[in-house]
Length: 195
Image (cartoon, rainbow, N blue to C red; front, side):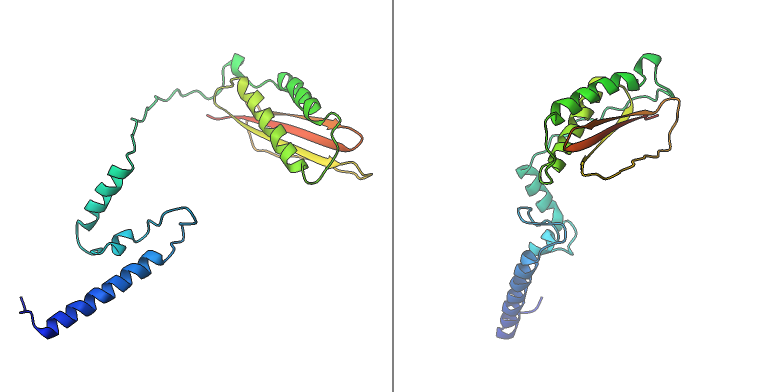
């Protein structure tokens, strides 16, 4: 070990100044995945010094884990059922679904006027209501997709179509439309069985 001389002390002071400058530059640098309100986590070990030393991160992890205690629940693993088709009572029935699609469209759009500022919010709300009602049918292992299109009636023509690759024995869809003097709406619900 070198003896402490004036030259060595000056070198250590310069080194600590450079290290402090580096710490502030790293700490002030924004990472690509941090934004306003999100604490910077990238290169935090370098900002605290000793990034290349083995075991330097141990103190940081223990400090972070003690401040943000996360309880981990054991993951439940289910056995495979090897079921390729739903039970007959658990199948998606388009007729039953068509009734409440008409009810939801009437409830939301009866007497409504087409306004470009609110039509996006309205179609999203109708779609969420449709998805909620289909989920109430408790169809196990079905994936649900709801689409609602709302347009203004102004002497134009429109054609809509949809294509899907699915199993025609288990998967199905239902589509209903609504019309008043100001707007038209088409709601489609797709249910696909997840094997």
